[in-house]
Image (cartoon, rainbow, N blue to C red; front, side, top):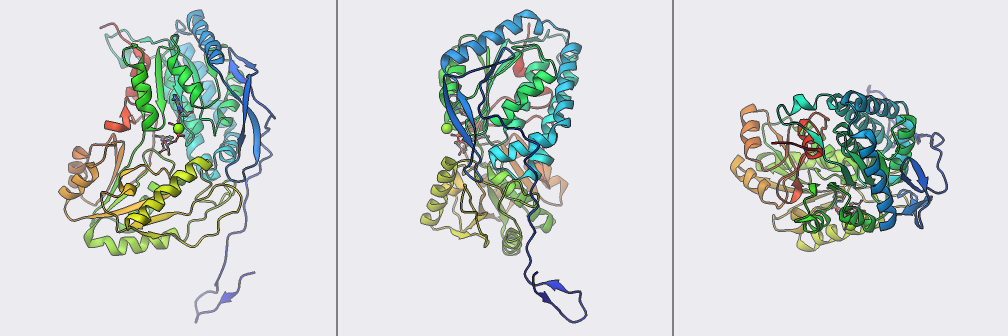
Length: 491
Ligand code: NAI
Ligand code: MG
């Protein structure tokens, strides 16, 4: 037991205390030794394989298929057949029934999915349990509601499905990105070939079980696993009518070049370097919570993370001091522990990238702060980090780090905040903290960002469209806008 301090008449408090471990049980997840590819409603063996691990322990979890171009070809053929054999002409109200079923099954099996998501991806269980799973189910519920109302969503435009959608998703929100992609595609009457990211295939593979439970017709959703080569084969395939990609700006640009002139529809959701702008009239403690949620949520593996903090000069010092104190209370460690705030970095590759950029910050002259925390020996970890004394030109102020690393900059006037915030090739999201409604509106109109949060951060809702400007991509996911990329119209 920790020692107790006795101070005057005040209650006794432990001088040094830590949280007892509160691990969520893994027993609810039944892993198979190996997984094939889910094509035409059946599991097929992949000719090549690789191993997926837990980034928190480096423990191998299962053997996964690395789908080849031939495997992708089978998946596209299955999707084409399912499209022609009835799915595209099914009444919207019938398609909705499947989507409602999927949503309900996800809710019923939420704990199983949350544990698996944390195990394979490294995110804290409290996030997969309270954010990823509820939002994934909500997306299916929401788009189920649109399936029989497309004529009302787009009056006099005769909305029709596009065909086969090729969908490529990243590793930061594996199941949620799957839901963002699959739910609107199916609601609009398309069929799907989806590839999860190579480091986080397991929840997408478990989702195949949900599809069977929901009795979705075979071939409507096909899941192929593998790395960028599998992704490139999907993009390249002639039988695919639409590509939806979420991932790095680099790969997004390559896909755009590859598809130029092909007539395939394309939406890209790429990187970001969001400004979180804190004015001196805001509720400071609330802003500190928002800053922490903005950049340390999901280890900072968030495309819309508030990675550039702009503090008004008059509150710079108290803000940074409060922030540092708050950082000391963040618990870094086992993703399956219910008390964990910051989990494991998703992969060795991502950890290298974070380390490299953080080193560049030191070299360029920024001042680094990391709270004392003991990191586990095995696995991939990075302590929550704040950089002060950051110049606009430093790499840590320009490039997406995609890790738990915040760069603090300052400003004096709203005009200056705006100019600095918009001085980036990206434009996905932004945050504004102020008491004045008029200032929120003034800023929101001028910030070149797809989403602007006011006095909050990283809030998501299926009814609200999400997407970027400039190098953050184009097209919207979520809301009514999220239907459009999956439809064609007779104008
Ligand atoms: P990535 O863009 O390579 O991977 C994302 C997805 O694209 C994965 O499923 C991957 O297998 C696939 N892919 C890779 N190359 C492809 C190709 N040539 N054609 C088709 N699909 C391909 O991202 P990566 O390498 O995992 O991460 C690098 C950086 O990208 C991160 O450090 C981060 O800055 C950024 N990123 C941004 C994301 C976002 O949500 N906006 C998500 C993931 C990464
Ligand atoms: Mg890559």
